[in-house]
Amino acid sequence: MLAELSSALIAEVERAAKLLGAKQHICILTGAGISAESGIPTFRDKQTGLWENYGAEDLATPEAFTRDPKLVWSWYQWRRRVVADKKPNPAHDALAQWQYHTQSSGQKVTLITQNVDDLHEQAGSTVTHLHGHLWRNRCSQCEIPYQNKSKGSYSSADSMDYSEALISCPHCDGYIRPDIVWFGEALPVEAWETAEEAAANCEVFISIGTSSLVYPAAGLAQLAKENGAEIIEINTNPTPNTIVDITLAEKAGMVMPLLIQRITAL
Ligand code: OAD
Image 1 (cartoon, helix red, strand yellow):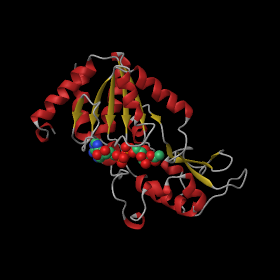
Image 2 (tube, helix red, strand yellow):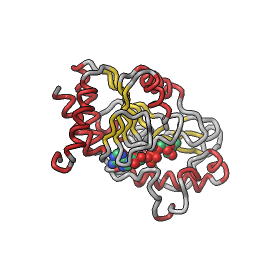
Image 3 (cartoon, protein in one colour):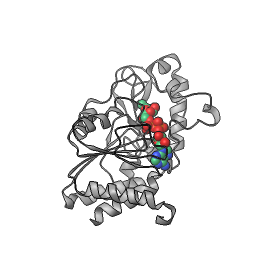
Image 4 (spheres, helix red, strand yellow):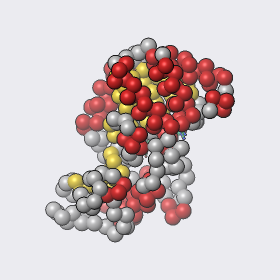
């Protein structure tokens, strides 16, 4: 793997590892790019097949669901089928390994994700989800969580019924929707408090595979910077973000195993 990385990039990875190894409080924000190498399309990728004429912004809104619940539900059922068999990649695994290592090193590594998949959990990480969970449903009216099927756990791919038929809430007859934060909706309070606290108090903030376009999550790096943190960005197509101190412009699945190997060897 090392042979595939340029010597300039390896030098930057070493610099990042040295910085991270010397600090106690780390906050990590991941986005769709970390799951790209697992085969899950990012939001900026062009949609394919049936959905190529729609953007996430046309479908992931409460207005879209009110206007055409069947369309939005069908899109999510399709996305669920796309994600159902996907597995963590080396970037997820490396982060889980780092978190495990911190049990003895004493570092505090808080992992926050904008992703609604559960690949961080599958890899063994403890993670806070800012934008909800793909495998959970709730009522669009009374908000009571909807128990998928009796088999499997409440929130896993094998508990899902992938039918595109709309479901009515057993309590109020409202339509069941995915338990995901849509554009224009508030983030879950507890998850946001965890993220804000970790960003404001970290010494290094690492942004992995996010376009940093969607707020409030995109503001976490700024909050960290204002409180004195250094910022590391890992992105195949780095953002034009002037607050970044170290840029690792490579696939997360290539960079993260090397970075974590260097940190845990220190
Ligand atoms: P985006 O799809 O906006 O951005 C993905 C980023 O990952 C881009 O900057 C890519 O350059 C980068 N990328 C792609 N492959 C990569 C790889 N292998 N390694 C590293 N980086 C890679 O995804 P998010 O920033 O997560 O919100 O999007 C934020 C939110 O917008 C999502 O949570 C979603 C979306 O609409 C909701 O659904 C509410």
